[in-house]
Length: 325
Image (cartoon, rainbow, N blue to C red; front, side):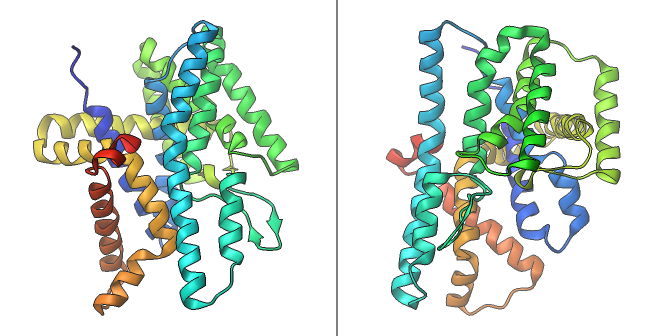
């Protein structure tokens, strides 16, 4: 049996920590947000592409699509239902009305980052948009992989067309638009698994990453692509740097390697708990109970510890574990 390469688990561990850093500190530190946003979500799509399936016969394709759905939808539904339950609790205890309950319930059905404005508020989906976008991208990659060397160019054209359409009609359902925008990253990951990448192209990607950080802006959630496709190549360069970092950690920092690889394995659970923690402001509520006062960085550390602690509990519950790992 082939031994699992923990390098990619370390990459996901680093990536999920960067997601939390970006969300909790990015508002007050724009440069930090700019650097992390330039590659942190593409990293997850690229790694997912490394383990995606190529084109197979139709019955097998249907089987894989069902597996993708069974893997990605339950964590999303559980997270959104917890958010609805929290909204119900707030409505019952603080008498702030039932609009948030209706809004979050409808968001579970709409499932997009930029839904319509309703009488109960704007429908949107938080961090877990990634799960639906990944389902769309991995599903579309299966037939796209038949094109072989044309797969990446076609994925870029599809993504750019989606980007232009979004400027005219900025709505979709079940993160279809974001899934199409993520398609090149999943396709690139799939391509890299099967083809060697020359050193000169890796260097070009890293240079493009530096240029993109300085002169462009990438934020997948808000459809911000200031210089397409420079941002795509730059995100690949950033992901490659994290790969090199992960290789070094695996080789020289054994304890750090074990911690980060564990976080990588738990990354789906961490993402869902993080989404709930941000919506419910759980860290603030627990802090109020204990009566401590935190500064910006200590509050950040507290919320990270709380998120990782709850995630660790989640992945050690036997019947729940299999939904997240």
